[in-house]
Length: 227
Image (cartoon, rainbow, N blue to C red; front, side):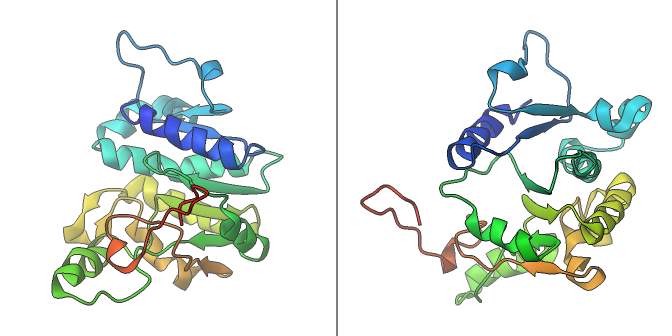
């Protein structure tokens, strides 16, 4: 619930540009004392709780993780849960600290012909050693793709990916750089190697963040649209 304020901003921005989407919130922790969560008053259409995914094993499973590990590890089971919905033709995941400023047209177009869509942290080589250390070396440590975003078509190859990713996150979703693991994210370095029909979406309007601003230009037009 500590990221609920961010998730509300994400949900509002999603609904503004894609009002036909069904928005699911995945909530790992329990309501703190004195706080009441009423999904009817939110922009989310549906909610999944950790107990819905792990059942009687929830407490013992959560005990093995810190908060970042737990909130990323649930993504595998949540993905499989959503892909099992009868009307789910595709699933798009966004971290709660993301806002959407324009329709995600390039993502939807990619899903027409691909099973899995990933966005890389870096699109262009940095030019200064400081930026190389801050950005490229960090990507080598923490993963090439930003798993704050993931899109899949609900087809056989994406379901094969979801099964594999869930198995890894159920047992090895830890912040252990000494083992070559960084929660859910670094596993996806292997996705273009292990799975077919993967799209690495090189749209500079996607995954704009502090770790790649050195190579991207942000502008706001007279119409208020952020590019």
